[in-house]
Amino acid sequence: MDGHQEQSTNGVEREGNRGGINKFACACAIIASIISILMGYDTGVMSGAMLFMKEDLKIKDGQVEVLAGIMNICALVGSLTAGRLSDWLGRRCTIVVASVIFLIGSVLMGIGLNFAMLFCGRCVAGVGVGYALMVAPVYSAEISSPATRGFLTSLPEICISFGILLGYVSNYFLSELPLKVGWRVMLGVAAVPSAALGLGALAMPESPRWLVMQGRVREAKAVLLRVSNTPAEAELRLGEIKAAAGITATGDDEDVKPPPGGRNLGEGVWKELLLRPRPHVRRILAAALGIHFFEHATGIEAVVLYSPRIFKKAGVEGRRRLLLVTMGMGVTKAAFILVATCLIDKVGRRPLLLSSVGGMVLCLLGLGSGLTAVEHGEAANRPWAVGLCISSVFLYVASFSAGMGPVTWVYSSEIFPLRLRAQGASLGVAVNRMMNGVVSMTFISLYKAITIGGAFFMFAGIAVVAWLFFFFFCPETKGRSLEETEAAFGEKGGRNNNN
Image (cartoon, rainbow, N blue to C red; front, side, top):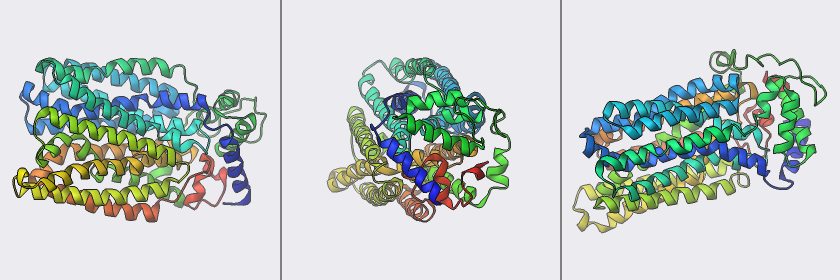
């Protein structure tokens, strides 16, 4: 990084730190992240609802796997189209579209007359999830300053964890309802906050970076004045965004002709990302896709979605007791996500990520060992193994939530250049949802084939590979402005080469 860039970065940090987190920017990021609560709720509530719908609808394990994973496969489709849509309509309108789609899916799942209707509902909701998972972190990153970007961009992951906890709580308390009603209420209630999100998003401002790419500099400046702590910070951020967009010096109150790729933002991006990427873009793409791949390849979805089965295999008996232990796991996940968000802008992305994955390796080995010991003897005769399984699950979730979970979304949303950001992030989300779906739809078959202990030994091996990948391919980005993160990946030409 040259002297000018370093001076600019330090200036942004000083201005961004003044007065702490901007309350308006924080409120906007929270609203944008609400749909992540719904996505997390659906994941958490399905872990318990599957026990009831299987009994009510008489569906088989193979169909349960399909219902568990099809939402993520459809989210892959949604995420691949969300990047171009958000470049065309804007980040805010894409959030509204996502909430409407998720609402329709929730209503279909809540009615759930048969397997086919449940399947359709989860497919529709999955498309909305794909839109939301792509646009919420990007929007949060684009309205925040470098000093608080890690916290605000990790809000979607906080909301996912909070939603999972709500799903577990819903399972526990609604399990007393009649069989045909309980699981449908669990799934259908998500339609209410979906409608509230769609209305709340209309009160949010558009991303200032998207506005600049449309040539709407005057509106962008107005938004920056609201999401920055001082006018000087707003001026500095606007200047950097204009430079990154390829806009020559103009008055800050003057709208301009959109830069190349402005009104038709997104045109030619796939070519720049996949067909003829520059060396630093290739490294950025590898880091973004890699971190999303390993987030789920290391087994988090297997633990979260199938936790009642895991605890049952470990020797925990009784449906209510299973749901209660699962709810405790949700509390742990939410608590450690909060710890991570407080540290991510102070400690940095890389230390949290490496320490988190290291802890996950140890916990997966412990869980595999405990489950293997239980499988080879009566649980009553191996209380140490039951204790090892339960403690390993809780510690694994804590390790994941303290680093891997939030860092994945923060890191992948901040490393792409402005022009490539939306569609680059959509590729990352597509990989994320693909791996989520693969793990969700194959875990039962996997543990039947290689034993449940063997499945977690496999996840431990993948986690070791993940640690090595992050160590060698994911540089630190803490404290850099969005317009300067390319330097961490070897970009030498300065901001104006972003276009």
